[in-house]
Length: 169
Ligand SMILES: CC(C)(COP(=O)(O)OP(=O)(O)OC[C@H]1O[C@@H](n2cnc3c(N)ncnc32)[C@H](O)[C@@H]1OP(=O)(O)O)[C@@H](O)C(=O)NCCC(=O)NCCS
Image (cartoon, rainbow, N blue to C red; front, side):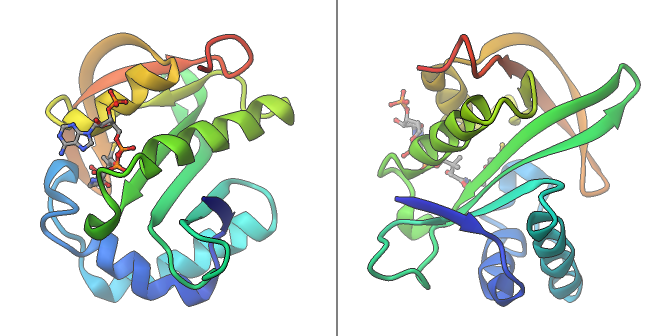
C-alpha cells in the first residue's frame, strides 16, 4: 500500500466515492457530480502546495493508476480555534481488507515523523462502525459526541483525537 498526492486526473475516483449513495450513507448522502472536477482540482492544488495532505490510497505500487480511496489531513478553524482533522474513504471493492486502517496509520506516521499537524482530530458518524474501529485500533482517544458540519449537512459524530507522537499504535 502506498499514498500519493491527489491529482486532477483522480476525478473519476472522487465521483465514485463522493457521489455514491452507499459510500456517502454515513456522510449525509451523495454529492452532485457537477462539483467534483472543481473539488479535485482544488484538492490537488492544495496538495501540490503542501497546504494540506490529500492522499490517494494505492493498494499495489505495480499498478499506480488503481486507487482504493483517500486519506486526508487538513487544518481548519472552529469556534475553539484552528484544529487539524483527518478523514478517509475506501471504495467498496477494497473495503474490509485492512487498507483503511493501514492508510490512516501511514499518514499519521508521516505526521509524527515530520512533526506536522499537532493533535489530529477525527469526527466519524456515531453509527460508522468501521471508522470508529479504525480510530480505536490506531490509538485515538474518544473525547465526546456532538454534531459536525460536512459538505453543508449536519451529522451526529464521535469526536476522537490522537497525538501521533505519543498515541500511535
Ligand atoms: C470506513 C471505511 C473507510 C473503512 O475502510 P476499510 O478499509 O474497509 O476498513 P479496514 O478493513 O481497515 O477495517 C478497519 C476496522 O473496521 C472494521 N470493519 C471493517 N468493515 C466493517 C464493517 N462493514 N462492519 C464493522 N466493522 C468493520 C475492521 O474489522 C477493522 O476493525 P479492527 O481494527 O478492530 O480490526 C470504508 O468502509 C468507507 O470508506 N466507507 C464509506 C465512507 C465512510 O464512511 N468514510 C469515513 C467517514 S469518517
